[in-house]
Length: 188
Image (cartoon, one colour):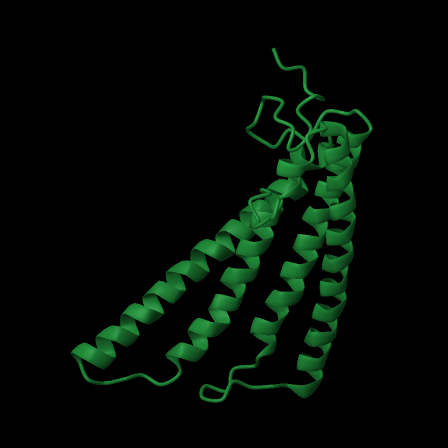
């Protein structure tokens, strides 16, 4: 078992991501509600609400994507489980695909950093409210870092399963539920 999921870092990252998702969800809901009321009830549309909602939406989407990665509920195309029946071969395929995922998410971190640096040097502003775009652009970089971290943990877990170790036990899960290699757990 990887001890990382039982650390304070793991819990703090989870709390941070959930807090950002909750606050941004409530903010988007409030912005849309205010805009609808002002536009259709009071006939007084407010300029810039869409801009703010888009910026807040960036944070919601990227924190949601990284949290989905942490919980391994992100979208996957697991066709191999239907094709490959041998659990040992399947877990090695998972290791290979996880290596590719880590590489791609590392590229996303690299490009995200370049985007943040570019956005900072250009000092882009939103068209209506003139809000610095770096506020929304930085969410892409932070989300990429978090996804890279969680994909690395997933890769490590799959590799340890491939060499015969037990899978990660996520916090609150006290049963052995291997992700893709059921022969590794002592199922009674």
